[in-house]
Length: 243
Image 1: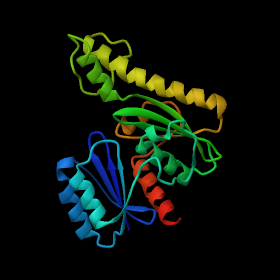
Image 2 (image 1 turned 135 degrees about the vertical axis):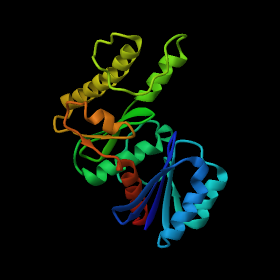
Image 3 (image 1 turned 45 degrees about the vertical axis):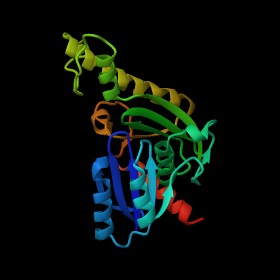
Image 4 (image 1 turned 60 degrees about the horizontal axis):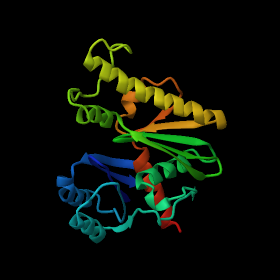
């Protein structure tokens, strides 16, 4: 069994895999990390290997606990991955993006794949049918756009995500919803179209916390999945253990 730990900007996602099958998943705050890890260790005593992926700060004592309890791979740019990384600055590439590409290699081998991760940021990552990772793009996510409008202006309110009633906003609140939601949808549609011009057989994956909200509103044929990053981390761990 494998323990998968994904430390994001807001929450920590934890998965337990029995070979390729995800048998346990939960999302926690950093405050509950050690309690949760000990509970999982008790519930799944057959876990031997773990992988830790972090785009945020995890306390040193939390990392020490993982290293103590499991044979742990701490994912970074030197970790072996099942694809050729052609990013010009690999040391600056987010480990979450490495995991997403690994999942695409595992589940969509020998295909041109664009992975769109709609979370705090919206990231676009592309790997070709030769299993080469070329790079992509990083843009502000939905919540970042709402907070930016509020934080960098004197009068615009801070709103929660909501589908606009009309693309023509007839109030300040509706104009904000239209500008942000429609802007993100057009950005994603435009990015997909740009890639399809060069890679006509493109497979598009949409994942991340806002994937469900966005997938229902996008015109393109995409695969929406909530566990793609965890599955990618599990694939990297299995790949390293087989070397």
